[in-house]
Length: 29
Image (cartoon, rainbow, N blue to C red):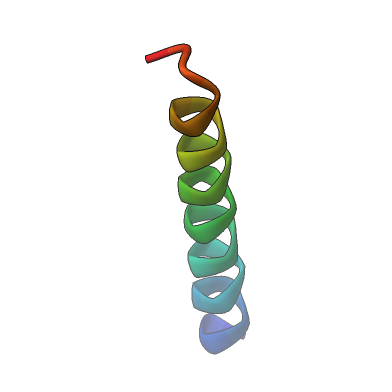
């Protein structure tokens, strides 16, 4: 259970980082 929650959290963080990089590459920031 705990491992599953940790994996979900890491997946969300990696997804947010990926989206942030895409936005930066687009030149918004």
